[in-house]
Length: 93
Image 1 (spheres, one colour):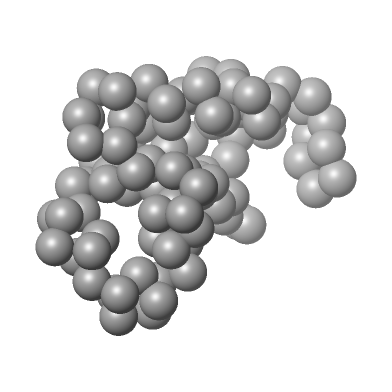
Image 2 (cartoon, rainbow, N blue to C red):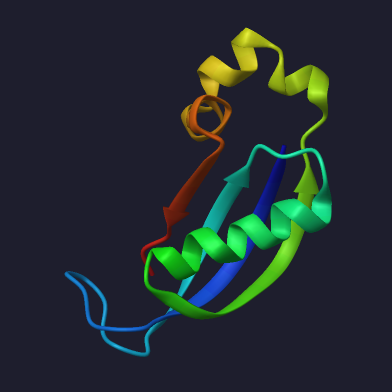
């Protein structure tokens, strides 16, 4: 699993966003390959209505942590990514 710190631009106005507003995200991708995980990260954000996606930081989560039930239970975002394959969280500024 990879965790990415990402900035992306809203394509159109939304409930709490203006069109063109740049927003930060943390994205969990449960995929073994870094290149593939990065591409999935970009695709999921594009599908969510964002462009100009810039991955700033990348972190590999060791597989023993992903398999540790205590760790997955403690980190709800990781638990969602294990269950569904990914999780996207937008940060409020």
